[in-house]
Image (tube, rainbow, N blue to C red):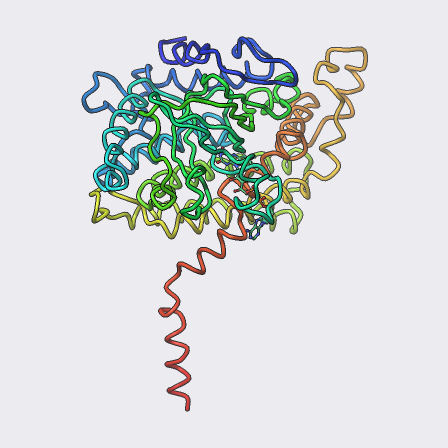
Length: 480
Ligand SMILES: Cc1cc2nc3c(=O)[nH]c(=O)nc-3n(C[C@H](O)[C@H](O)[C@H](O)COP(=O)(O)OP(=O)(O)OC[C@H]3O[C@@H](n4cnc5c(N)ncnc54)[C@H](O)[C@@H]3O)c2cc1C
């Protein structure tokens, strides 16, 4: 292992409270729930130390003598944007598109803030300096970052005027010389157990009177009083039977704050609901981050398509017309998202206020919204093509070395694929569509970008309606 992967793993030993079941995990890299995923991430970090591949994922950072991940590159040209896009794609393909939150999303948000620091600095007198210092630290130390923006689902019909809700949503309990002290919960944070810092602010617009809940903060994962409560792990299955779960379980967690002190240098905004909303809805930084989400989505669709094609070949169903229709549909999915990535990059332009070279946001929004429907459909097609084959497998690959070996080799073979390879393929497909990890991914693609219902509705609300409706009235006027 080279320098960066090891430094990343060492950085996790910071006293953080990661809870897996009832155990507080003392050594993440050796714990079966995290070992496989951490091995994957540290390998990705090491790519930046490898002179043969580092240009695929990094760039020589200004003011620093070494490469930084391209998610930290502030784009001022089409070349810069292409470099960012290539890095997102490269990392995503390294995990077969399955890992979505490899920190390049949250890093991009910080990069967008940094590129807009002068404009955002108007929100608070100390914000520009705080953003600059944090960006440089995160870039130069390869910090792994994630976001946690939503509040716990207690009673969505009530808001912060309800005391039960106000007490449980993350809020400031006191201010001290050192910083602000917060209690309450946030959900969900993907990658939480192994992040270095959490970017935390409210996803929803808050009313000015809810100032105790209005903050934008960067919280170190090792903060005293912060509990990272993980969902059930999917990673403990063996690599031969669950090739994805064992390597790529990103882990999701709820964050419980029990009087956590966040030092002032990490408090970007405190008590100002309007300023928090301006940061949260800041188009240039969101655009840089959302761009990552659609680039990595192409890699995921390609992977599902590859698996589905292989399954169709393995059992000889690829000649049936309705199967071909479905396999063709998968290609249209890839091309749809790819085309939106290309369109967003081709129509990129300099942002008038920051000078950053930003991809066209409307195509990115469309790809994110439509992706919530494409992914479940891709998985449905995989199910339709492989049908009962996904459960016609022995429990363990190791049974090929056991007493039934000869019979398994005879009865599990496919068109021109031996039994062992075919079962391995179907187990991979099951891990994608039917395992706990597979189900989590369908949920993820439906919701990671926010509530899809409100996302589609927002596209309508923010659209240029007159450009579409005026021609209708013009035609009708001409028809009178
Ligand atoms: C696997 C996974 C990983 C995630 N990782 C992250 C992460 O790393 N960081 C992060 O910040 N977030 C993450 N999220 C959270 C994600 O952003 C939210 O799930 C999403 O925004 C929806 O919010 P919710 O889950 O609270 O659903 P809710 O908002 O509670 O919605 C539940 C249902 O109620 C409806 N509903 C609720 N309120 C309203 C309303 N006011 N108007 C109309 N309809 C309403 C919704 O349409 C939906 O049908 C993750 C989610 C998943 C599933």
